[in-house]
Image 1 (cartoon, rainbow, N blue to C red):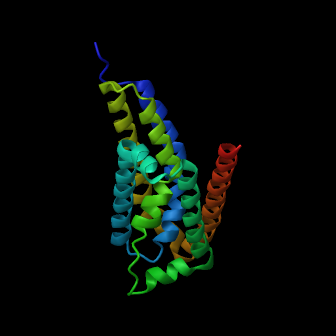
Image 2 (image 1 turned 90 degrees about the horizontal axis):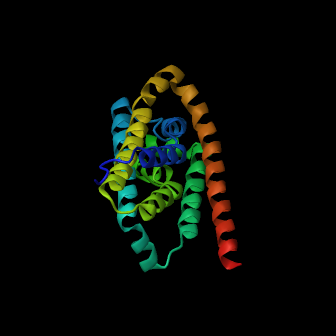
Length: 208
């Protein structure tokens, strides 16, 4: 009889993606990127970011290998590009330019889509990990169900973490949020540099 659900695969996928996407760690970055928003706008940004991240992860899970192969893009190149984009966002957080953009009535940038939805949440690490799990699955209903439920569960955790960031914002006030923004920029810069460094190592290994 075919197993309808594989709890071990579910746990493996959930733990891996939870560690990579890091719902608790997104809170300070989320507060930094949405510091100038109202409570309603911040709530909307939370579900938009999660929806975008889920869409990107599912798309790459299904079509990722075909897309990268067709465009002759390596996973290392995808990782490096994500790191560069995050580094640019980190610089804006550290210099305060992100707050200026959000405060401007003419600002058209939706941070829920970029950089929150991708590449922060649905970044190269999460994309590659999901593609690996899908590739290793034996094609049974149990495996597909476990992977799908684990991906959804991680995104629910992400939404809850960002949804209740309002509570943290009320406690920190504006000055505390600015401090958290600067710290988030530093952490995000470190994440970006690590992504780029890992990509360089992968490039060197492929060349050797």
